[in-house]
Image (cartoon, rainbow, N blue to C red; front, side, top):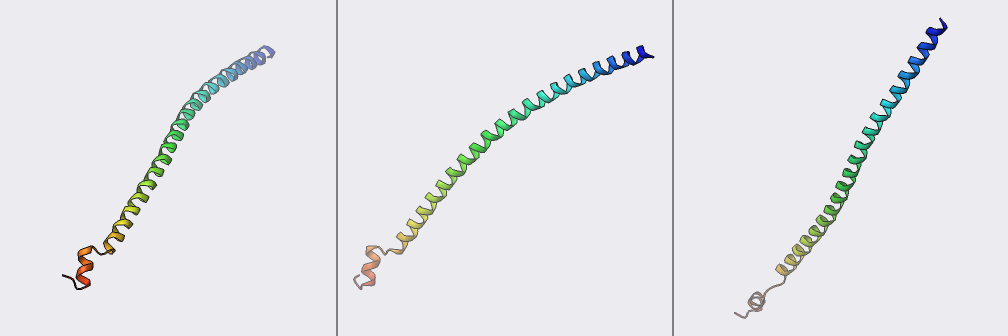
Length: 88
């Protein structure tokens, strides 16, 4: 009976050790994949932030051009001014 227990303890211990090693391998593999994906995610977020800043600059430029066009359309040309003054 003692031999059976000792044998069983050795087998359980051996299996436990193999299981721990396998779990470590799986964990290491998944950890590497997660790290790679996090790195990709970080790079993509940086690219998105850069594109957002570029888009804001474009929007501000378009807004400025639009305002300039509106202001220019409000200022009468020389011909329009002369017509209003009665000089044709």
